[in-house]
Image (tube, rainbow, N blue to C red; front, side, top):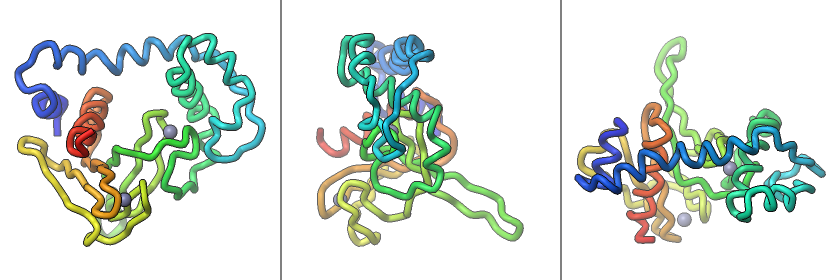
Length: 194
Ligand SMILES: [Zn+2]
Ligand SMILES: [Zn+2]
């Protein structure tokens, strides 16, 4: 599944929409770049880690926006402390506390056969191995709890709508780039009707 396929699915032929989508990750990146030297002071290595940051208010002052500040700090935390949570198996991100929307399926060649792992991919940059057929919002498990939707043109992309709580998550194979990842999260929200 290519970036172009995602652009087409989100925007169709609308040039303005495409440009916005193409630029969004870069704009966020350049904004977050100013935080590359910010050092979060962490009280305790407890998830979600962003709640443990003592100097969050100075980040908010720097960013001028609470949500952006938290995202910027979470990105730093993911870089600095991601390794500490490598065995994480929770439903929410241990760094920023978000419920994951995007999941990437990675295929690995083992000694005898190919295996696949499902990774939750958070906007803060942290990712962790996740169970198949599980809703990250309510914990419902088993394929009978999901409606699976596909969108024409998006090969290897599946949208899962939980029958218990309505939460939608999206699963994609391969290595979608930042723009495609951003677009897939937007599509998941469309599918959820939000
Ligand atoms: Zn996160
Ligand atoms: Zn659910």
